Every structure is written in C-alpha cells, then in structure tokens.
Length: 171
Image (tube, rainbow, N blue to C red):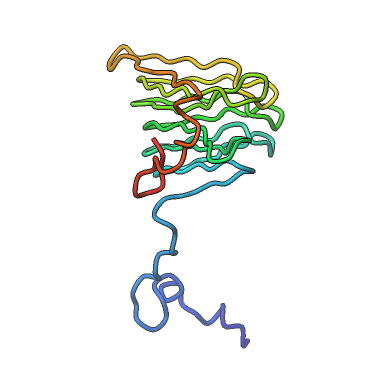
C-alpha cells in the first residue's frame, strides 16, 4: 500500500527522517501569559484545573503576577507572589491567595470615585470576592511580617503611570 504512515519506521517518526536528530521543541514564550477581559496573569508555570469541564482553579507558580485594569485611567490592581491560586465556582472568581513574599497594590474607591491606593505586603495575601468585587483582603506574615500603607487620593492622582519595572510589572 502507498500509505506513508505504514512505510515510515517508528524510529524515524520520533527522531526525524533526514537528520536522525530529535524534532525541535515547540517555540513557546519564555513566560506564559493568560488574558481574561481586563486582567492578565503571568508566571513561570500556569496550570488550569477543570472539574466536569468547568474551571475550578488556576495555579500560577514562580514569579506569579496578576494585574487587572480598573475603571479609572492608568489604575491597575496588582498582586505578586511566589505562587498565586485563583479559586473559581460557578464560573465566578471567589477567592485568590498569594503565597510567598506576596505584595499588592489595590486602588480604593468611595461611592465609585477614586479614593487612594493601598500598597501592602506579607508572607500571604488572601482576597475574597463577591459579585466580582473584592470584599475582604487579609494580609498574613509571621516570617517577614506585614507592611502596608494607604496613600490618599490627593497624593495618587496623576502619579499612577510610570511605576513599572523593565518587564512591565508595576510592583
């Protein structure tokens, strides 16, 4: 029969028919990036866990970084740590946990108006969500302690841009 799949030895299919060398590795970006709406996740490894074809968990390990654009210009909530875990239930983000040297920037609002920024860090940061909005943020840190500051709006307005590092991260 003229079927080329039958005539190709298994060794050449694995190593390549001409050179005998292994096939080249697929070209992947150095850092995986996941986009969803106005949010971006990056890290050394991003693993997505499904249960019955529904998203349940996103696990970002190594240089984990999440950024979400706010409704006001040049304002981006940010969370960075050694590991980020995103827990999803019924297609809705319910809980986020940053483990290991966690740091966050969270822009505050009052009656849907900008009201400053909270910059905090600790060993672990946890965020509970309700209806897509952060309801409770916890900062924990027996090893390195917890540090933070709230910067009033008068000191934030107009200063949001230009705080990034060369890789585009803002913390």
